[in-house]
Amino acid sequence: MFTGIIEGTGKLIEKRAMGGGVTFRIESGFDLSDPREGESIAINGVCLTAREIDGRRFLADVSPETLSRTTLGALTMGSPLNMERALRLSDRLGGHIVSGHIDCTAQVLEKRPDGEFTLFSFRLPEKFGRYIIEKGSVAIDGISLTVNSCNGGKFSVSIIPHTFEMTTLGRLEKGGRVNIEVDIIGKYVEKLLSTGADDTRTSTGKTINPGFLAEHGFL
Image (cartoon, rainbow, N blue to C red):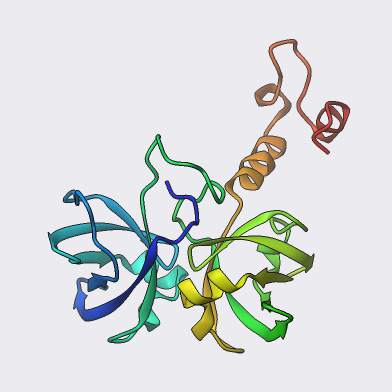
């Protein structure tokens, strides 16, 4: 589990095929204090397992399923990477709850300056548009961001100077693609409301539905 607060960037220094997937050798741009073999590290928002950790370098295997859902397959030698180590229970939750499981990719429609900030607009598959809400959270290449506006499969975010400089967003251009993880809470609520009535009753016997949520101030 992650927060979407990027610790720093790294780079891809080796990429080789492995049984339909690939193996990456990654070099972190910051010290991996107390590294543990098999720990989870988010790379551009994708939860990967680190092995053969050697100083700032480690290997990570990427499955065919992950390659099909993310932008990792398009990475080349030297590609910059957003990196975040897994959340510890004692950490501050500065972003939002991020699982590291990518839902889809999105294309950059626009990148333009907005005063000291940078405004990005993206387009993602329509079926994921319902999980994007104004002022809600979304993880873009592992970065926890707040949605400015949204309309169907399009949405925009405003990037502060610090995030622009400390992540890979500064290198992102129109037409580029990014990994998207929508807010996991929205997916669970949708699942809950789409199940049968017997599965969605409270301890008092009331059915959990849009009316129940509105009555209790959730909608």
